Length: 109
Length: 117
Image (cartoon, rainbow over all chains, first blue to last red; front, side, top):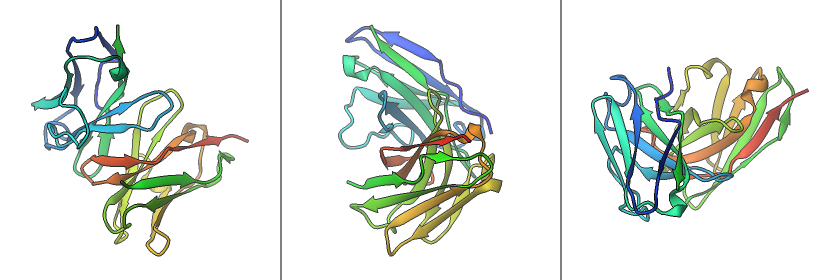
């Protein structure tokens, strides 16, 4: 199985919106509504930000939103804040296994 | 909130077996799927697999032949064994509570395992 495809890095200024894409296939992202997104700060464990494509766990700001179209899922962060600077990983169920994306480094300018 | 703590040797020799334990507190081991995820230094996340309290497992196909998971409900622990390790298995190993869908709710702090002679 191959990792999902994410851009290596994205950037935005405080207050702006950024979108991170996550491209898979019909066997994973396109085949199930089970895409999740994780935020990871350096030296820390990942944190669940979005699950089941669009759902936010309690405590995650509504500035974070998820969507999916075909084989590509997206994470949008609006009203960028300095503390949003981190690595972001998408993750998809693929029937008999689970697969992560390669990760995207978000830089807040 | 579920708390998870990984433990095990930080150094394993090539060709030997890597063994880790995840101790769960704040929740019953019967409540979730217990996933193992690893991250080589400076690289991305890789799903290793999960075990359910019943003993049902799912493994990453690329690791399946070398992996064994187990659960000890009396100690609220889950364990991982990875045999015939090489330097490519050097990584931070995390355990996580969640589901089979890729929803990983809570994570341990992770433990770095280095494979080296």
